[in-house]
Length: 435
Image (cartoon, rainbow, N blue to C red; front, side, top):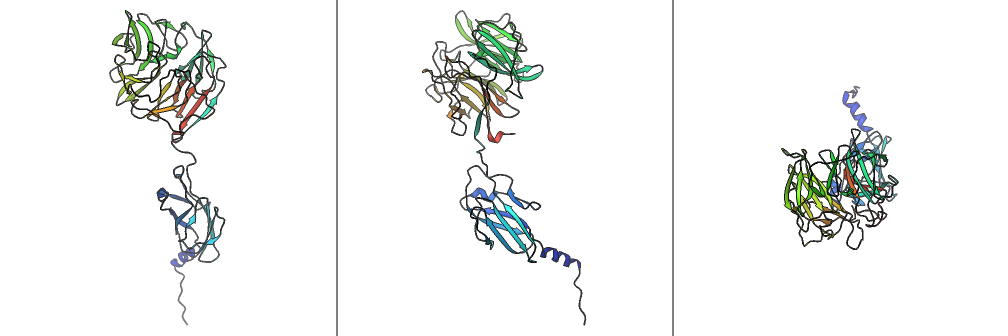
């Protein structure tokens, strides 16, 4: 009798397949949850884990879904235990499964002995990517009970730092904090800082800090030592700065007075002044928020709300690209964010954010407004961005954006015009901008 041998190389492969109990791929689908079909599942064969690395959007919900599995080789049976129900069932490959919680798969190979277990789960974002979480990051900061306060981003000892000017009982003090840790503040000595300066309008232009007092203009290279600027006109207000643009140097934007008439004016880095248009009656001269920004390779300066020369509250947005001519952007008849003073405005996440301020009744605000069209229209932000309940409404805060961490920082602020500044720092960040 002749018995043929069957011990060729293919037999080893057949034996391996006979003991193979691995999942090669998994996919899920649901008629009402279209995004589920796009989920790509990773299979960790070593640890027996199956999961989608890119989480599904926040708020995605489902229970039973259609599950499709491809096996590395054929299997004798698949025991399934959904954690959501606790049931055990020999799965036929077509019955829907409850994936609202992790699901355990235990596969038995064709040999009847070899098994392998997987835990499969669907990852879903637990926080909405477009929401902003605000927290009180530090309190107290300097320990001073200040009547006025202004925080700017400047350079101290050749490193980026926040400089905080605080005025109490007519005396101005200066503190600094490294950008990397805005919770720790150290007092510095001020020299030559003018009495009666409006520190809410302290402005940086071409790495020089400016402030006005009694119609005179003062500047400082380091923010500590101050001198009067020779040959300057009578400065009634500092509006901000226009950054360097193409062939044009940085410009300090101001309102000056000539023969009793208020006009716009710009000072370049050489100290030369250019006069502009007369200041309209409805233009803000104090209590405004300001921000400089770039659009289409041009530099702009924007002002929000504030008080006109007669003390009337405003709810308008103005902008300029040369400091000599200003244009009102908002519809004069609109009341999108209300008439108020002491608002803060900044550019963040490719939009403009405006918050805070104190209205004619002396009531402070903590509403947040956003603009996607460069300040023309404003919408009140929804609950995803608003401040928490323990955040006190305020005006005259200072705002900065930490570009390294994408946090928006809000320093101080007053709950009314007659109260002291809150000695605290809040910070918030859009969740998807976390680094």
